Length: 274
Ligand SMILES: C[S@@+](CC[C@H](N)C(=O)[O-])C[C@H]1O[C@@H](n2cnc3c(N)ncnc32)[C@H](O)[C@@H]1O
Image 1 (cartoon, helix red, strand yellow):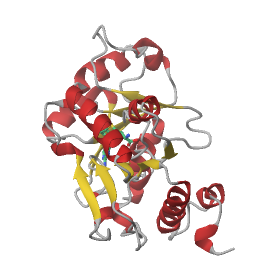
Image 2: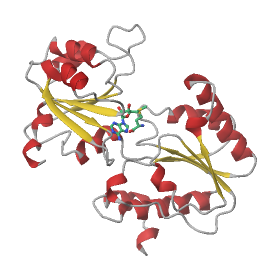
Image 3: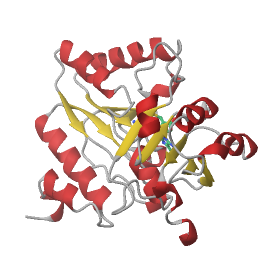
């Protein structure tokens, strides 16, 4: 059995290999083509590795949708693959999700092979399951290909392990999409303030002061914090600070989304390695 014919589970176990992404991409595309179904692919974050998806030649007309997927992965697509930039679909965020869903369904029903390429993991605050449900309701079969979420991949590339033996035995990933006092919030902030382990906050830059204040209700003021902007890209920036100062540092350093904010003792590890 050759490398690119290994079962996907075996390929996933080989995630330390330099050729991992290429091999997975090959295997996934082969699997999707053989199954002749649509794919919802999490592309992970791999800009630093210089790896490229090695798309097979000989595709029939296929459509590939992308919004947050790493654009450099599209470089090697053959010309007959049509790329639809979902970021440019109009009418605002809520409506555009409906347009994205209907585009996926219409293209698939027109007989095209559709790949929905998303950043990180398609389901982790990625609305991927909404797209899957829409396709399922329309009778369009879908294969899910999970990617490494930015919640874990971005800290890792920046030198921050989200767990470490003897330091953190728990890690919680939280959305900062709404403030702690927002009636729409489903997050138990008092429980998170009692946490000893790692908290990874996504979409938290805009309301960092409110989140830090909520955590200060239970966590020590000197809890280490790492803020990583545009992780894994050439523009990556990392700011190391502590809980009581993180809001001021985010403002002073002009941190902008996309950023990941890691709270907990692991955020102080690896600082001396940078
Ligand atoms: C809507 S969520 C989508 C997450 C995605 N599904 C995943 O698994 O990575 C977008 C948030 O992910 C985080 N994010 C994604 N890519 C990032 C990057 N390269 N650097 C820092 N944060 C990133 C930011 O918090 C951003 O606001």
